[in-house]
Image 1 (cartoon, rainbow, N blue to C red):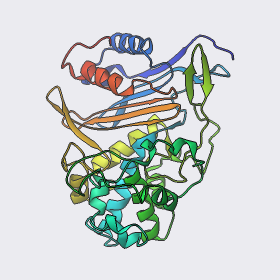
Image 2 (image 1 turned 120 degrees about the horizontal axis):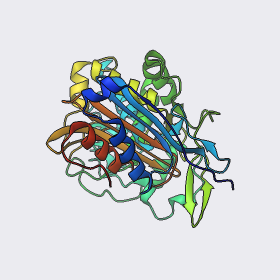
Image 3 (image 1 turned 180 degrees about the horizontal axis):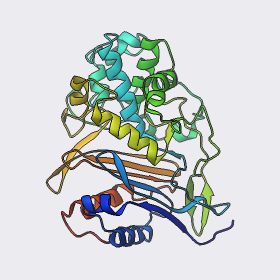
Image 4 (image 1 turned 180 degrees about the vertical axis):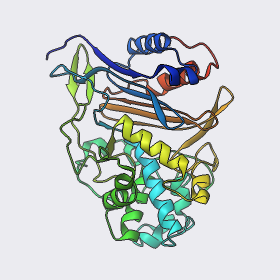
Amino acid sequence: MRVGCAVAACLLLPREVGAVGLDHRRMEALIAAWRAKGFADGAILVARDGRPVFRGAYGFADRLRAAPSRVDAVFRVGSITKSFTAAAILMLAQDGRLTLDDPIRRTFPAAPQAWNDITLRHLLTHTSGLVNFTSLPDWEQRHWVGKSVEDVIALVRDQPLQCIPGRKVVYDNTGYVLLGGVVARVSGRTLGEVLDSRILTPLGMRHTGFVSNLGPPDRASGAIREGSAWRDTGWMSNIRESGAGALYSTVDDLMKWDRALHDGGVLSPVSQALMFADQGGGFGFGWVISVQDGRRVWWHNGHVEGYGAMIARYPDDQLTIIILSNNDGAPVEALSRAIATLCLGTRDLAAP
C-alpha cells in the first residue's frame, strides 16, 4: 500500500462566503482539526441560496493507489437515498397512482397478514414496526448482492413487529427497501428508471445513480482502517436498486437535488410541505426534522461500508452543507454541525 501526503483542493468565493459569515482561514482551520479527528478523505460543499460558496476536496480518492481526492469525485451516499425514494412515492401520489395511506399488502399481497395495518405513510416515517433487516444478527453472513425486495420480505416476514404500526418511531432500512419496490410495481418501471426520468435527468444530475447499475471510473474508493493499514471495501450494494441506501452521487449533484426540492422543481407545494413536516418523532419523509442552536435544520446522513455522507439544509438561513467521505465511520454529522456553527455564528466550534 502506498500512502502519500494528503491533498486539498478548494474553490472559495470570498464575497459570498462573507454573506454567510464564513471566513476562509477559520474554515480551513476547522476542517484541518476535524481531519485529525477522523475526516481523513472526502469532499465538502457549502451553498448559500442554492449557489456554492465553498467546495473542497481532502485526502485521497483511492488510498491504496495514493490518488488524491477530487471535489467532483463520486461517492456512495447511503441513506441519503431515502430522500429520493420518498420523493418518488410523493410523485406517484401526486399522479393519483397511490395514496400515502395505502396498505403495503395492496402492493405486496404475499406479505404476512401481520402487516395488514402497515401503510406507506408508516414506512416513510419509520413507524411501521418492521424489524430493520440490516440489524439482524446473521444478515451479513448471507449473500445479498443483487438480491431483491422480495428477498428482504422473505427474511423479515416471520420477525415480530417491534410496535403497533404508527405507535412509535423505530428507524429501519426495511421500510425504504419496500417503498422502492412500491415505486417499481405501481409505475411498471424500475426505481432507477423512475428516478432517472423524473429527477436525475431533468435536474442534470449526470453523476448520480444506483451502484448496482454502474461502477463510475471517477468514484472514490471506500476504505476501512484495520490497524495501521487501510482495506478497500468495494462498491456494490447489498440490494439491487435499494430504496434505502444504494445511490451514488457527488457534492455538486446533491446541491442540485437540495435546490430543486426547495425551489419547487420536483414536488408540488403540498408534497414539499409533507416531506419537510415533522410527522412525529423528528422524521419527515426521507428527512430528519430538527433544531440546532435555535435554528431549523432538515438533514439526513448515510453510512455504508467504506463511505459516510451528510446533507443538511438550514431553511431559514438558506444554508446547505454537503459532506461526502470514502472513509468508514467518518464524523460527517459532527463536522456538518461545526461548519454550520462557523457559518451562522451560533457558537464557537473552530475545533472538535
